[in-house]
Length: 295
Length: 295
Image 1 (cartoon, rainbow over the protein chains, first blue to last red):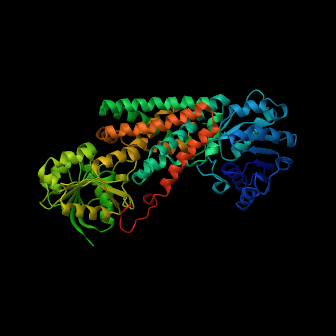
Image 2 (image 1 turned 135 degrees about the vertical axis):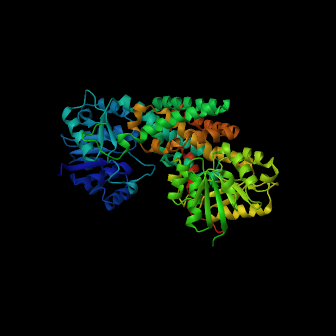
Image 3 (image 1 turned 60 degrees about the horizontal axis):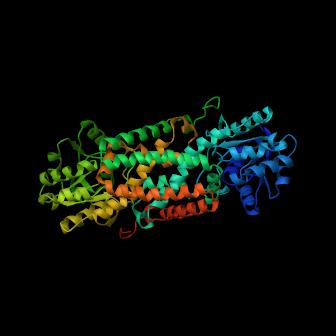
């Protein structure tokens, strides 16, 4: 059952901590080493059972790692991946959990050793809550994880990356980094931008009159600012395109409302509502895992 | 403890059903009569314990009512309020649960008897789910209920309306119908429009890559189309203004993103995030009830 020796987790926040908890809860590994910037977080991660040992020294942390999973903010991932690849043992598999892929993959594949160890990944799961304290062993259970291998990705590392992410409960999808970033701009980055615009549009003095629609519509506006500024910058052009698609919908609604034609408004609403219903019946949202891990 | 004799509920859906359940669960009334358009819904409401008896005949339903609560869609409320006022006993209090107030109040106050019995109300609670099957006895517990009395509202009816909505667990706020409609355009109608625009902006084939941000940001897009087309039409101008306020936020975000300035994006995000945090500490969102029922 213990498939792995040492797994190194670079960045022990919500995602890194949840990977550690999942690995340990499933008995998949002999040892989880957490690599962080501060002793306090590492102590907390150890206390919560997310890691067995912690260090602030990346080189030492990856020295015996069979797998290194980089879970730092997207703007730092490429550098951390390269460092882990350079300093880890020869056989190391390096993977990541970043919300964007194009820039990371481009940066890493310019370097020979990192390119030969790296399989880019994005487990689509998260929370507006930050930090290892909010980690959950079941965060990835039944969730989609996108892998974005390319012609430089060694077959053995790809097979190990598939096995690793599947072992955490993920259902795998493989696609081009560009297709990933375009898709996630619409399915994740846009909803985050919209949530924050909505949060800010309601004056503070009217908040007593807000209820469930505002609460849920703005939940992810509570996410970390630096983290999201990084994601938006890394994926600027696809997010701008996603904003335009959203803008088109809003413009249709405004036109229907301006006309005052109740039938037109109802028609617009029905079409949005049926899209939302499709989401509810998506297998990835039913909390079940398909037999072969594909969508 | 039984403060009321017969309470008539006109329209036994999610809201009407929840009022019935709350009245019965709290032992506040001798009898709840439900008035609906179809026998099937009335049977279901009776089976669920939301009403004691049901009828499709409004005149018979309100004949012995001390209080009639009109919970039909906003476009039908004024007519139902007037009918209940005309056909109910002399002492009847008529109130409603509509999401808009200006048009309803204007229509009702043009008629003498209805004007003398009516206190307009809006308990701010709901769900994207439709129908009596989703009713909950605690739907109004700790929620704000806005009353919009004016100079025509008889003092005795106002006092009874306050007592009625408080007895369901609501915290009362009294304001002008126009102020109510302007506020709710921002706090409720805008979030609904945004949720549906967001739902529709993501192509069906990308839904497997959507997760929590899309799920929560679009939840209320599942709401009933006819109901919401009615609310938008009733509150057209304030909703158009609310859309502009939202548009301004989106435009700021787009400008920050276009500039590619990470600091500017972070700054925009922080300001939205702090607004969202204010909502989380709103007393009305803590599920507690203040001693005097005011905000």
